[in-house]
Image (cartoon, rainbow, N blue to C red; front, side, top):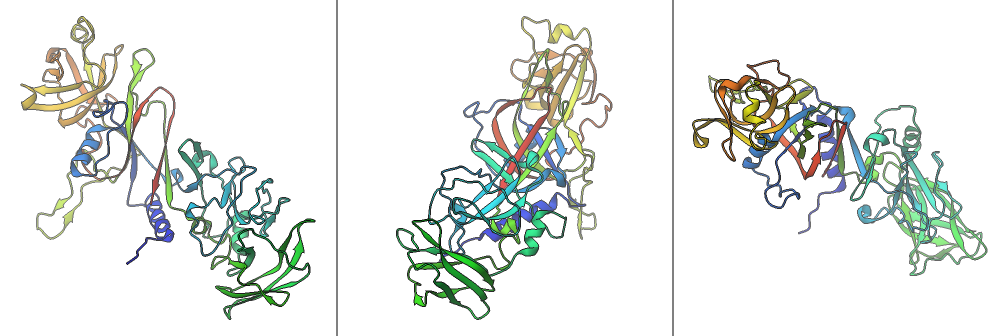
Length: 477
């Protein structure tokens, strides 16, 4: 038994996930985390394990999140810049094109074309530039179909080694663009190309001979004629592509059956360019998120910057003061916890130490309470009432920033490092507040382990400097 999920299924899944980002009931956040080193083979990331334990670990690594809006998401296709001297594969209706080099993307203009004919397997030497609804014929004999011009290439185009993607548009109504012109002019069941199936492609037929095709009864209107391309070669010039064809069982040239050496290529059911996302086998979605200068602050130029190693997507987390989803008291339905609605979430807490605390943090033989170090409160580690790790410090203002992984830190108990039990004594703790230094009751906005972690990207360390950080994630279906 043979089974396969088709490219249309992959596109359907990508579009359904895309729709979530514009939902009024669901919110997806992109988060940064994992300031500590990888355990297995640093700096290389640890393998990702999809399990409940891993979800808990992702939340423990969670430092800062930002909501992803519909403008931050796009369907994408592999980026394929035109290159002279390349023999491009032509579109064929009965071939799996997923492994073929059959379309091009122009990063500077945003234009996308698919190859209809490659002039009997000759190298392409002229890049197409026209944007009309008719086929684009270049001087090298190639026939191209203009598909669309992407307007969001700055955000969604990438041309990095091993990470090459390009945005694709799907229009459901007119927007005055050339893409809509193409969609409106698309004709289903056209024959735009008749190829030679000989081992060495050739069209050594008499110039002027008519080409006639025979197919399904719904197809009609095709006309073609043998024409000279140059002094050495001929080709079949299609003077009317017809419409409504779904199969061709016979091709005549000059009244002679040439079916064994020719193949008619039929356009998609709705025509070339009617649905670019479907025709170009779209199977991926790009999510971008721009973290500004202080989102989050993981150090400074004077004291150094920390790193992050994990990027993820989390959906519908609950507010930290809310309850997890649970069965109602009456036992008849599910009571949902209060979902977080703000656009950003900083999970760090701020510890403010006193001047006297400098002697415990800054004055020992070497500085203590270092970046990434684990800390806890309680009689000992086994009986800790709170645990977490340090993300950064601000010596000038005597702030230490932590992410909590267990319990709740308070200002009424010593804080100790896990590695060597350095102590910030309770007498030298001014306050424990949220990252902004405002609230001492709500220390962080999101309830740990709530919502759903949808996507994880574990990377080698990335230093979080004072500049803007743009994250791009590609989800493939």
